[in-house]
Amino acid sequence: MLAPDQPIQQGLLATVQDHLSSWSGYEAFYSAIRQSPKLTVYLVGGAIRDSALGRERGQADFDFIVEGVSLAPLLARLERAGRVTVGPLKSPRWFPSRPDTAYCDIVPTHGFNQGFGSCTNLLECLAQFDITANAIAIDIRSNTILDPYNGLEDLRERIIRMVRFDQPEVAIRAGHVLTWRAYAWCRIARFAATLGLDLESSTARWVRDNEPSQAQRHAFAANFLGQH
Image (cartoon, rainbow, N blue to C red; front, side):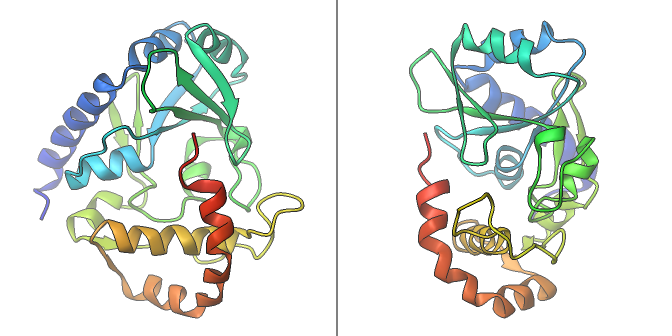
């Protein structure tokens, strides 16, 4: 079990910082952020979740959401320190020039869309996340935690709880077989199998009710697992 809130947050910030610092691309990434003062950069998703659970991440990826007018100057600086490609959801993906397999996805708030339309700020983005344990953000500059859906509490209780249950049954992009609902279903099923957490009751009911989504698991794996 996790400790009370304040020790969790202090320990979590230290652990996340250790993971970021061990990434070969972090020095160049943070330098690019310092040179982009009009952007607010948040770490989100699995790096925070796994740190809170005390899981070793190895050569994992990092996910950042960026508030600001334009990513172009930031991406130009990162291009000089590695290569910028496009991820499966069409957001920028940066690989540092130093040799490791860890990369980061850099998603502008206005480009974040999990089937509910584009966003204007971080909170709108977090409202589209799949589970509360992923909808936690850390402001990279101020080193503060934003946890609007009590994801840390759910991690303390070792449960998986969905943020929302209305994922649309529409393709994640034109011409694609995978739908947003199946995308969420496959992710949650994978979390349940790999994280050692229990599904809370409403989430378990949604997973059962949407079990036909598992027919799209091969499309999910082909597009989102082992992407480099």
